[in-house]
Amino acid sequence: MAEQYQSFLNKKGASDSFEKLRKLGLPNLHGKSFLDVGCNEGFFCGVAYYASAKKIVGLDLNSEFIERAKSRFPSVDFRCSSWDADLSEFGSFDVILLASAIHYAADQPALIKKLLGLLAPRGILVLELGIAPGEGDAYVEVKRSAGDSRQYATMRALDKALDGFVFRVIGQSVPQSGDPVPRWVVHVTHRRPTIMFFDSPSFTGKSSTVRTLSKFCGVKPDGFRVAGIDRVLQDIEFSMSEKYPSHRKIIDKISTFKKEKSIFANVILEMIGHEDHIDDFVSFIIDYRIDGALMTLWDGYIPEKYRYQFRENFSRRGFIVWGADPFDNLGHQRLNPVELMVNLPIGAAFQSSQDLRVYLDSATIESGSLTLVGWAADAGTKTPLEQFLVFFGETLVEDAEIRRCSRPGANREIGCPPEVLLGFQILISADRLRSLLTTEILFLGLAGKNDLLKQLLGLRLFVQDRNGGVLEARYSSKLQIVTG
Ligand SMILES: C[S@@+](CC[C@H](N)C(=O)[O-])C[C@H]1O[C@@H](n2cnc3c(N)ncnc32)[C@H](O)[C@@H]1O
Image (tube, rainbow, N blue to C red; front, side, top):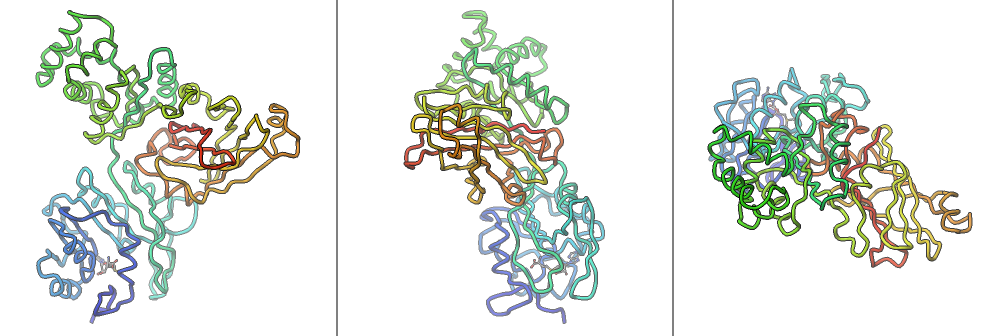
């Protein structure tokens, strides 16, 4: 009789399935399609059943487990089958789970690829697997307490197997006695197209930033596509050739605006918003200009009153939307995000009032850990700014290590006694960093793909003054830190 592996309320097995469920961080399964590969006795299919998933399939090679699963959850579609069989008959799935099983696969990357092929466009593959230590790209043979040996991927090998997708290491899974290597939970999704808006008024340096960025990552197919009203108007001229009949309405409308009112892009854009053609206009941009590119830089003013609508429209269509105006809410003194972008990380300065100064000298990544070095001071009281909040996207990095250090130049600059430590070093460990890399904040695949040094980090750093409470100064490079 096959040994009890999963745990149920009435039967305990070797694995603490309830705790594993917690660690897996499955998305809400209500109304979703769910596939569990190597489902054993059907614990997770049962979870999907109780969560009202709409289609549930459980696969396992072991007929005994499948029989037990069927008797536990009779309405679930359990199949006694190998993952090596043709799985296309099941269609695609919103959520696919492969837990504690990949080490049984003869060709692990091939299994991952196959499952990713079954993933719905907004779907998620949840992997729970042992990861071997080591920096290299290797499958390491590890002897197990069961007496056999199995191959476990290193993080780099896993990274390679997930090439072209976005993955996020959620954290360690529940340990089990006799585990030869620690288990991790990894969520994998399709890459979503990203658009970054440089839409502030003229002469704020949008175009030069866009040029810098596209030079930095201009290699197709991973490079940026540039869009903007001027370019789109050109597209419209060229598209007159009946090539895009479905966009006839917006093309005609814009041609009328051009003829009647103005040749100026800004005015035309005002009219598009005013006459509520934003939806048609965005469709046209996506089909004609973005044309399947994964990364787009919008280079062109958008009137403030329509900005939200534009962004929201892209977001509704599945785009990840970045705004390049992180200082919008800063109040009286507006900083120029463009300057910030171009200058980072070489001595960029941020100042939100006369007195408060924050400088970031460098942002470097070594062995996967990120270190930010700079100084922050209140030049009025000649005291250091003490409280740092580091954000990646919307996530506060709770365990960033902050060290004070000496920064004599800063002391001289604000006329502060040399013993006052104005400098800071903020360290974020490799593990922490990995768990923060979500689709929303990282353009994975940019330049060196897996090479953190070349990625753009969605990093925001806030500095509070010593009285706490009021956020007086903050440097918010939501945009990027380019290193390397
Ligand atoms: C350690 S158990 C994990 C069970 C379950 N995923 C969990 O985490 O609770 C591994 C499962 O993979 C199944 N398995 C092994 N090789 C398989 C294959 N080629 N196709 C489908 N299932 C397989 C085993 O029968 C076993 O039920």
